[in-house]
Amino acid sequence: MRTLKSANSYLVSLASIVILMLTITVFPSCASSAASQENVTIDLLAKDFAFNTSTITVPAAANVTVNFDNQDASVGHNFAVYDSASMKKTIFKGEIIDGPKKITYTFNAPQEPGTYHFQCDPHAQKMKGDFIVK
Ligand SMILES: [Cu+2]
Image (cartoon, rainbow, N blue to C red):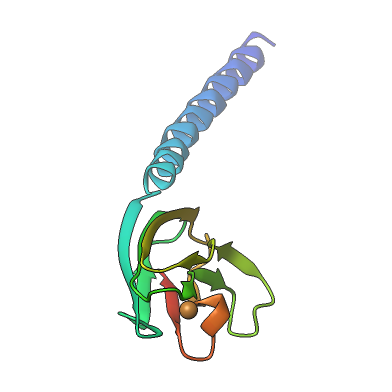
């Protein structure tokens, strides 16, 4: 009886140690994924009805800052991100500003890596590109 009891308490201690070790092993990965939310700044220029880039790449879930510079006088441009060119899902839609003017947009990149779509809403046929999340 007594040996059985001590064997049981030995098992309980062993289980506690295993749980503790699992907790220690799992927790740092949670901490590092939270810390991986990076800050990214993109300088984007709109001039002569064109963006200065056709590809923007950011890390997943990044805090994105877009310094947008519309240099077209009396023309309204913006920056917007969608799931695709068919615009089924809006990731971010920036305010349209008439140039010459600058504006700072901030938003969170999608968690899911993939190739998304960015554009200027009033000129989506010409002013567009790939918004890549890695
Ligand atoms: Cu535009």
